[in-house]
Image 1 (cartoon, protein in one colour):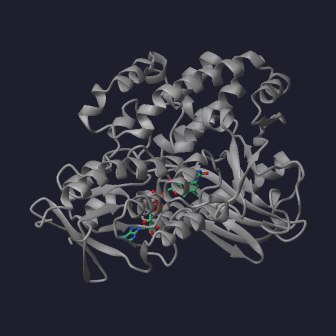
Image 2 (tube, helix red, strand yellow):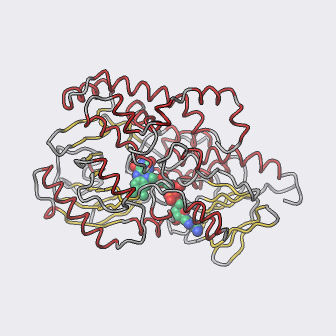
Image 3 (tube, helix red, strand yellow):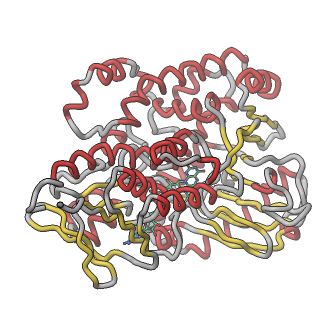
Length: 502
Ligand code: FAD
């Protein structure tokens, strides 16, 4: 009997793990090669002086994408992964003292916006209803299909989806669209922030991104028990259960292909043969180093990166009742902040500060009793070889000043543990080009169509998943990339399984 074709996945990021699960469940032998000693890529974790820190993502939406993997694998999710729905999506703080609680219950949030911002509740409801319609119609197209196969565009449901796209979704920026819906500048700013969920600039990214608040506000936000790292652990365990073989500390140096067909990879100088290779590595590095294709790498380099981040992980020797799991301290001039990040490519002197505190959900576990683990993040440009030490110093001072001012406190003496992550480190640890959090930016109306496809057009048997390819960055989209990829790769594996020359 002929052996099943074999699969190699390069990278154990969330998309690589999901890809491994999908192809193993389909019955193929799967090996994952990961350069780090642990799975998860950006979705990783560390402990410092009794404080627990999720290193990267902190916001968990659309758990259905994870449930789908367990369902597919026929495994009970609750044995691996538990999560709860959060009543509050985020607490917003403005420089003039205005505070808004973004409840995940829409009517409660609309009432809060009316009271705290002077925004008519009906405007919030109207915006989120339109966002929901847009998501339900166009999301089908974007999240479930490869946009790089012309046949897709002749399907009836796709034509219907495309017909739902309006002028304002493509030809107006998210900011212009938000201004059209909202009376108050502060409400527009709150909804502009959603562009940062895929590392984009709301003053340039298309109105289409108004689908993002739908996901947070209509569908809700969630907290995985044990923190975000629980997602990585759950997917890694599920992959092991399904027979996936992991090689850690195993960087891949090159992808082997011959006559336009995949043959395998080299890791630490040793060849490993496979019939199908899935790269979970940023496409720029996949082309530049793994395929030695400088021309395509240069083409990818011309596309604008999404923003990166500078993160301070602080162990705080106090509890702040006015804070929640997710908190935003807005800058006074949002337009100037995004101009600094994307046009001038520099640190904005008074950046918007995001603080995530998992000790709010698991007090005494995520941080010592009566203390808090602060994940303090600001958006910064994708790295361009700037001096990170200077940027770290300037940002730290700016953040502390801002928090002292807005929380009426003295933060510095409360910081009893500290670690820092900057764009250069993000690139070296996870292989994300320039430390971009979400691959390429969505700052142009065609960005959705310009992302790299989930398959190679020139090498048969080479596929792509992760934040730098279609449909984009962020955990839900990365998980979708694995679904789209497997929808294309499984028919290919079936086709070659009967051939001797594979
Ligand atoms: P990665 O996680 O980048 O994994 C790629 C893997 O490939 C890594 O493990 C890397 O070590 C490995 N690799 C690279 N090169 C090689 C090689 N040559 N050989 C072998 N292995 C290799 N998303 C959200 O949904 N919510 C959030 O709140 C959120 N916040 C974020 C905050 C930060 C600070 C960061 C960094 C990201 C955030 N994101 C968020 C984005 C999200 O983390 C990513 O989109 C997602 O985790 C990317 O997954 P991935 O599978 O594409 O790749």
